[in-house]
Amino acid sequence: MNNSSIPVIAIDGPSASGKGTVAQLVADKLGYHYLDSGALYRIVALAALKRHIPWDNETALAEMTTSLKIEFKAADIFLNEENVSEQVRTEQMSQGASQVAIHPRVRQTLTKLQHSFRKSPGLVADGRDMATVIFPDAKTKIFLTASAEVRADRRYKQLLNKGLAADHAAILKDLKDRDARDKQRTVAPLQQASDAHLLETSQLNIEQAVDKAMNFIAQSA
Ligand code: CDP
Image 1 (spheres, protein in one colour):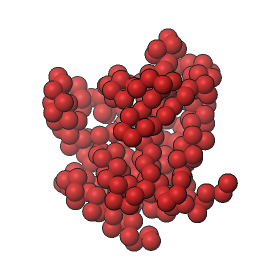
Image 2: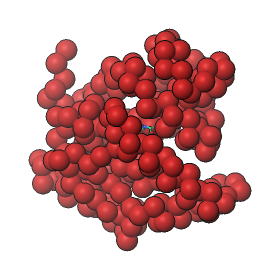
Image 3: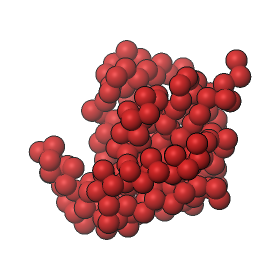
């Protein structure tokens, strides 16, 4: 079936920029479906850990990925029927996701699954390569970012709010490591698409960032 007429809003950006929250709120406002593509790389990292497959073994990871049963049900993510929503959110899986994500064959294996989220009436997709690789024909492309310090602050507060221990300096270092790995990889690196709107959120709260995103969407209607 040709679904190229179904509108896609692509929201890319670095970790902890708030793009997941903004993307979800935009999807709610528009009544669109939502794809959290980062969760897929997190699941691959988690599944590999459970099977003792190293995150640098591209062949084994790609083979494993083809056999995974991944399902999103409401706010929860299931891997082979197990609810892994909490397990994929740890810092270990953030680092693992960015390590498995450098492999072209792993990315290739996840492409069809990502395309399958494009369903009527529309899709808001969040990640690193939504606008550049997965949905290059997206109707609206937004590159949502904030300074590393602001992003580290946000992640720090998120962890404290969840009652988890948090070390600000370690969070900032992890963020910078992941930014570097995501930008420097040869396949689908994190970069602003030439036709994407830049949304700098260092000075904005979530509501203001959502308003700006909705303005960009209205401009491309
Ligand atoms: O939530 P946060 O921004 O911290 O991370 P995420 O969106 O869940 O993505 C985790 C990791 O998956 C990123 O650091 C990327 O290396 C990778 N990723 C990717 O390569 N391509 C995507 N479309 C989404 C995530």
